[in-house]
Amino acid sequence: MSTHHRPSSRRAPSRVRAAAAAVLATAAVAVVLPAPATAHAASDDLTWSLAPKDGTLGAGRANFAYDVEPGERVRDVLVVTNRSAAPLELSVYGTDAVTTPSGHLDLLPADQEPTGLGAWLTLDAGGDGGDGGDGTVTIEPGDAAEVPFSLSVPDDATPGDHAGGVVTSLRQQVGDGALSVDRRLALRVHARVGGALAPGLAVSDVGVVVHPTANPVGASRATVTYTLTNTGNARLVPTESVRLTGPGASAGAGGEPAEELLPGAVVRRTVQVLGVRPTFRVAADVRADGLVVGVGGGGATTATATAAGWAVPWALLGVVVLVVAGAAAWPLWRTRRAHRGSSGSREVARAPAR
Image (cartoon, rainbow, N blue to C red; front, side, top):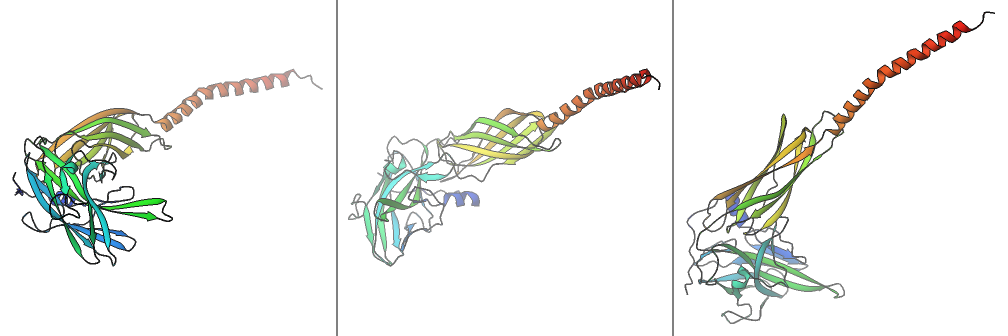
């Protein structure tokens, strides 16, 4: 099988390159954090860093990215550097990358078996240079260890982007040993399998709630929620916007800066829109533009959806009700007052003279 790597001649925009250069670092609860091109992790006085080895596949790489075909095999090397004053023993393995429901990039938990790209990775940690080993690497203070690995693409791999990570893990006992903490540091591994690239986005389950305001003539605030799904086979960085429209009024807001969405990712968004005029009924228009990132880029895609919600001006209605009630009560009050006045005059006239 071929062991070559086909680098792309196209360069993504700076924003895209920055997103693609993000490094996955996880700790105890598997929280993913962005990191520089050379990733660093610290555990008390134990510190280490990761970087791809420079070579025929590239120099100064932020992570591992390959343009491959089904059945192809790529060999590469991870460099692990012990930056502490004590020996370091790390577990090394491959796993899948995922997009969390909140839209952040993460790795599978350590006890969950990968079924995607992570299962394509074979690392020679603690071995003799061939694929295998005992899955651990021991590094003396100030030294660096090279961990060879291979990515073997299945013959039936689907076209498009696949994501995973090469993970280094330091498991320690905390306190009296009752708690075990797993500190992980990883570099991302991306593979684009040849075939038709079909980017796709979908916006669904749009909901809008306009919050009441105490000011009868003031603007209100609305909360718009929706689900964003990467329905295609390409990695996307979405740009989202929300606009509310009603009789004689409109307001809009952009979504929060978003991380890339892996294929199949489903995330739930919540956007606050200010300056909404309560005009009884408003429509929420959501638009998402997805820019394809990864090896060679690949275009863009757009999705839209609309939903309606009530925007009742309760404060203004309250004022109107009070005015109407006052207008209706005023004649009655005047009539009663006049009646009482005339009754008092008749009683005075009937009083006998002394």
